[in-house]
Image 1: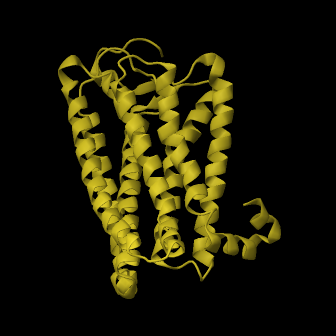
Image 2 (image 1 turned 180 degrees about the vertical axis):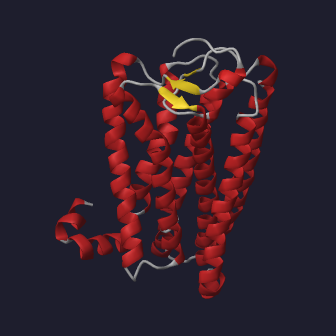
Length: 313
């Protein structure tokens, strides 16, 4: 199974060799704990934003979708990695690898698009408070969420199609715990490696464009906040933006780490650390950042689970 593959028509599977043999059990245990925490946290958010009638505003509709994306995102890669460790196998089928690439990029693109929508929600709430309900009506929210999912699907399709249109040469070993584009493009034949830079430039342009839109939104938001006469009023208004800004910062820093990983020519432990950062941390921390410090969410959790839950948070 470790034999070198030279004929592209024989590429039936890849070997995921993400971490050293002596660290497999430790990594699998750590991944399981992080995965379990991400599932519990995001499922709690979906549950309370569904059944609590006080959490039906546009912000919580978007938050529910964000939690759903995070569950799917971390479930695409981590369970397969844990299963490979438990069964002492490292293989993933060619089709399975294609699906992993598509789903990871699809969900990452959807999350970024949704974060862009959430920045517009904050912009409408702070800059146009009297018209907020008209701007962010139910139909508008549904359309924005649908557009986020659709744009992510298109983004994932383009990247998956482009990645597997190259010719692979040499070994079928992917030095990663899941199929990611940078690791796969390292296996591409020399003439096809230019595609690697095309993907990087395309992703950076897409990310930068969305980032500029977010920056423009927050320039308007901060301008309005600075006009509030009282310091307490400024802080209270700005505090509604802190969770979103934190999540955006985490997401963009994770994307930057992913880019740094793509520039490393040789596999290393640093690659694994980088991949863990951008694939596990955002889905795990988003519920904590965006919800568990939110007073409305605390009240909802208290109503469902009682006093012990609220004191833990």
